[in-house]
Length: 93
Image (cartoon, rainbow, N blue to C red):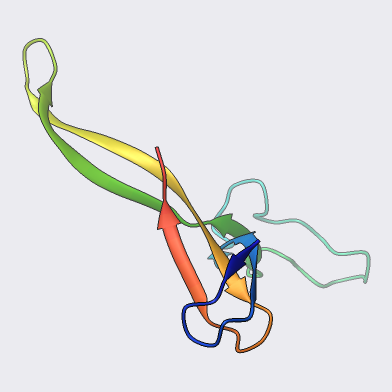
């Protein structure tokens, strides 16, 4: 258990997610018919939840013929205060 830096309340561990709209131009959705007769689902998008990630350049170059900046990706996690709702996010290796 950790203590909230704002109010001193209890902080709980969690993960941040964002809703992403997936366009209907997905070939798997194109032209599908719904259970209701005559309603085409080809124009309807879907929503999915994606976890937030942090990307940063490491300062190193990678590649054999073509060198490009190496990038490190980390999951963003955090803590939320049960008392005031303060959220603290961080990324760890």
